[in-house]
Length: 367
Ligand SMILES: [Zn+2]
Image 1: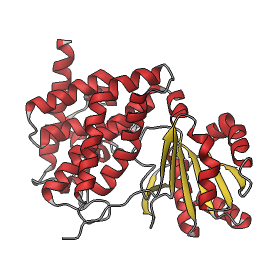
Image 2: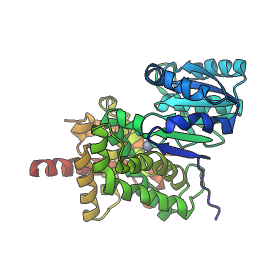
Image 3: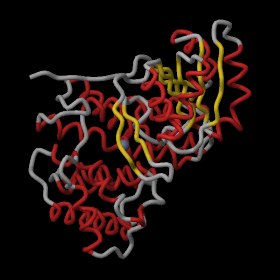
Image 4: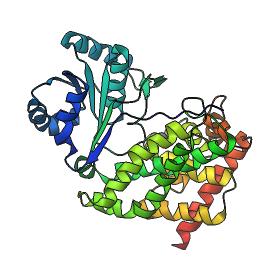
C-alpha cells in the first residue's frame, strides 16, 4: 500500500511573528505581490510596509483583495503579478484572500506565502482553495500542486480578533481526529486519494488532546486579547495540526454533514467550524462512539461555546423533510461520509442529527 502526506514547507508562529515576514519572504523570492484583506490594509498595512522595506533584497507591491475568491479576482491579480514580475504571492487576511493567493501563485507557478489573521479554520496550511462565483456561490475546489511555501501566524493578531473566530476554529479542529481515525480504520484515502501515514493520524490525535486540555484557557486569553502559551497551543492545533490532520489523515462524516447543513439557508449565518462542530456531534452518534467519549465532547463544546443543538445553528423547529435534504446532501456520491468504516444512509444521518440535538437540549435543561 502506498501512503502519502503533504505539508507546508515552513510554519512560523508566535506573538509579533509578522516582524519576521520580511526575512521569511526573502528566502522565497525578490518581488512579492501582497494580497491584503481590506481589514488588513486598514489596520496593518503601515506596519507591513515598514517590516518589508527593512528587507533590502525584497521589493513589494500591495493590492487590496476584492472580497471574493472568484475567477475574475484571480485574473485581475494575475495581471498585476505578471506586470510586476512577482515571484512570490503573499495572502494576508481571512480564508478567501488566502485561497486567492494560492490560486494566483499556482497559475503562475511561483511561490506562495500565507499569513492568516484568524485561527478560524484548517485551511491555511493546505494545498486546497475554494473558488466561488463573483456572487459568492460555491463553484469548484482547486487542488494546487504544492502546499504553501510559508505559513506565518502572528498570534497577537489572532488574539486581537473576536473570540468567536478562535472558538469556531476549535470546532473545525475538533472534527480532525475523529475523521482521520475513521479513515485510518477504513484504509480510506486522504486529500491525495491515498491513505495517510501514521504521522498524520498521530498529529490528528495531538490536535484533539490539545483542544481538550487547553481550549478553555485559550478562549479566556483570546477574550482578554492577550497571548499565552495555552493560546499558542490552540492556534497551532487549529491551524497546523488540524490542517495536516484533515489533508493527510482524511475527512469523513463530520465535514460531509457540514456540507449537508449548508444546503439549509437558515445555517448560512453560522460559520464553518460551528457547523462542523455540530456535524461532529452527529458523527459521534452515527458511528456508535462510547457514551463517555460523547459526554467529553459535549462538555468541551459547552465549555467553550460551540453549538450542541440545532437551534444554535439556526435550525430551531426544522421539520424532518428539510433536515432530510441536508442528510441526503451529506450522503451524496463522492462525499467524505463514504470514508466511514460502515455504510451510511441518509436515514441514519437524519437519526444522528436528531439524537445529537436531543442530547444537547437534554444537557442544557440539566445545567
Ligand atoms: Zn474544515
